[in-house]
View 1 (spheres, rainbow, N blue to C red):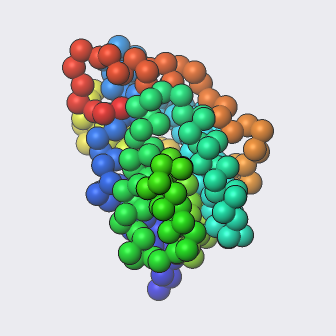
View 2: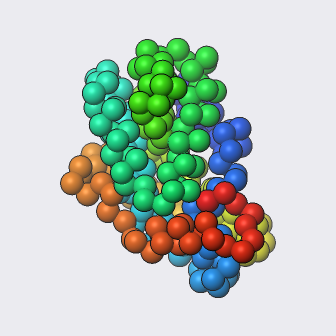
Length: 228
């Protein structure tokens, strides 16, 4: 039995009580605008979000936070926290990242007493750092002995499951439609993991502005089921 696999399943579990279910990452705006309205457009949304957004933001930062933890490099983790805050332009997306990160820290710190994580949490409590989900994920994946490729696979899969689940509820779609979308994303996730193992620092923050604009518009929707 590989303990790292169990740790990864726990860390990337979509039902982990950190509040991820309350955030749509702008999908609710796309649905209300009629842009995402069926299984095909839902798959297109998830595909573009993973490949054109997360690949160059959160997933790349998971990879870099993992390396910073391996090297016990506190200064690098501080830089990554600032960088992550800077690339999240929509307020709701930035706040969601911080809420999920601090809740993940609260859950895992008693289970994995890591010195770097403790220092990170103290800095967040002092309002010196923001505490982003992707950085906490990468930190604990490394601390728990999960191989980086497996950690990235879990991170991308967790994000895909969240978006597909929200699409099933919002559009709505049948559960079978959702599972077919998710199954069809497996090759893409494998490709993205390979791309993100050694991310290009100069490309962090590269994404489609449409995602940011839709997330900003979410703040002013007439009715909302999700917080972002």
